[in-house]
Length: 134
Image 1 (cartoon, helix red, strand yellow):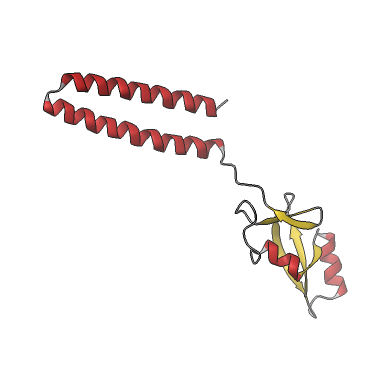
Image 2 (image 1 turned 90 degrees about the vertical axis):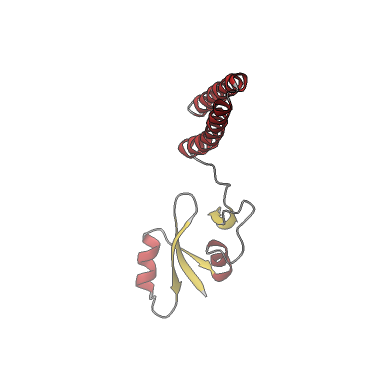
């Protein structure tokens, strides 16, 4: 079995049409005009996930007429910023909770120490966020 398959500009399979008795020469030519290429079933199995997820866990793409491991996923700057924010929000909340407990215990030295630590954490977060946006 073979398939008429359309790939995007990154080599990712968009869709496939089996080459069978319903696909006459005219229909096949029309698909080729749209950018479809004919591939065999073994190759098709790479693109639909039947041959594993590739070296980077992202599946396979077509490059130079053959399946190769898709590149590793690189998070966008916005996704990296969101992850960074989540990490630091958790740290700040933990410090805020500790400050409240220290205040309740009347431990002013610990409150001051925790406030300094919180300021350092916020400064570190701001620096890392700025570095992401460069």
